[in-house]
Amino acid sequence: MTMHTSKIVAFALLAIAAPLAAQAPPAKGNPKDTEVWTPEPKVVTPGATDAAPPSDAVVLFDGKNLDQWITVKDKSPAQWTVANGVMTVNKNGGGNIETKRSFKNYQLHIEWKVPENITGSDQARGNSGVFLASTGAGDAGYELQILDSYNNKTYVNGQAGSIYKQAIPLANPNRKPGEWQTYDVIWTAPKFNDDGSVKTPAYVTVIFNGVLVQDHYELKGETLYIGKPVYKKYDSAPIKLQAHGDKSEPISFRNIWVRDLP
Ligand code: MG
Image (cartoon, rainbow, N blue to C red; front, side, top):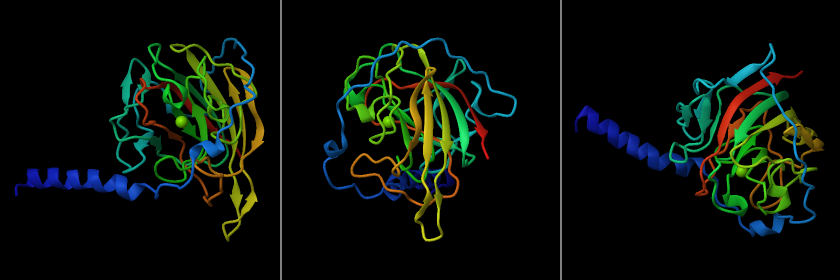
């Protein structure tokens, strides 16, 4: 076997083995048990929102490259697309990405866009997400949902601005597909005792297109697709962006920055 061939074989084996190693066993139960469909948050038309990074921000994406990001499952350089100052989910590019740096408490600004030609419905229409703390492989962590929720019915604890399957947004200020939207987030990380029990829970405040949608919400644990949320001890964690497995057109991001908080 030549050097070249052996590299290809090793890479192929890695590609097969990595997803297996990275996935927890599938949870048992019915995902519908944790969906809430009513009442629907009221629709609010947002005003303008603009937020260039302040002087003490850690810039995570300034439109140029993915230097601050890695692929979650194998820690290799992130493979999403960067063009015209925008990064776009690459659904064939290794999946979720996360920051190289880890964070505890912080303020985050992130802008995202649902493509104008979006198709699909319910959870399969522009699904992505910001994991405010990525505590492991796959979708482990605390997800602030991204979805096209402009005239797209889904369970309300899974629409844009929700803390996935935990906290229904206080309003629906979604813009139309094709328009940029903003999340400004204040994340207070949970604290844990040595034995792994919760000392203080996580809290999150989310302003969506300038409208408050989560008001110092006390999280019940990590956000799960199936089953009730539970906490899992961690110290500091990266911020993760989701490459959701649905077939709709991919979400784009720009102007991402964070400020560490004491
Ligand atoms: Mg999502």
